[in-house]
Image 1 (cartoon, rainbow, N blue to C red):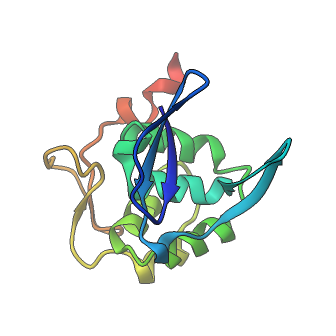
Image 2: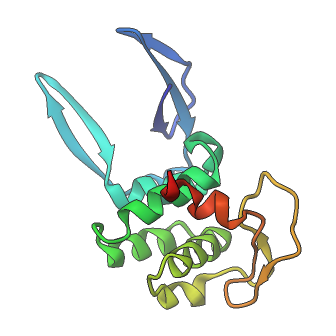
Length: 156
């Protein structure tokens, strides 16, 4: 399944053996895309930093928070962190900033620039899971994913 962002509701589409699902995005969150062209077809594609932010905003469409964590880990050294931070802040989602800040710091990258935009209340790292007994006070995150889920994939 290929997910496409749209500011208008659209039906699922099948084309050349691929299934496309449109995800309704608030127009205020529709930024961070660049125009590309294949043949005569123009289309918008998310900048890598925005793809990570969109995935953290709607983790169910990206395979869950553990998959988003893998993307953050794999991209942290190759993306423009200033752009990533700007996109996160521009989403105006404090929970997203807390989760991103926690993940980046867990993976060894300073994310203090996000602290002023982080949640004022505790949020679950993975919103789809129940709370754990582990709390990160700095980012106000209930860490309900274990080390194996966050980093264990690197061992394989």
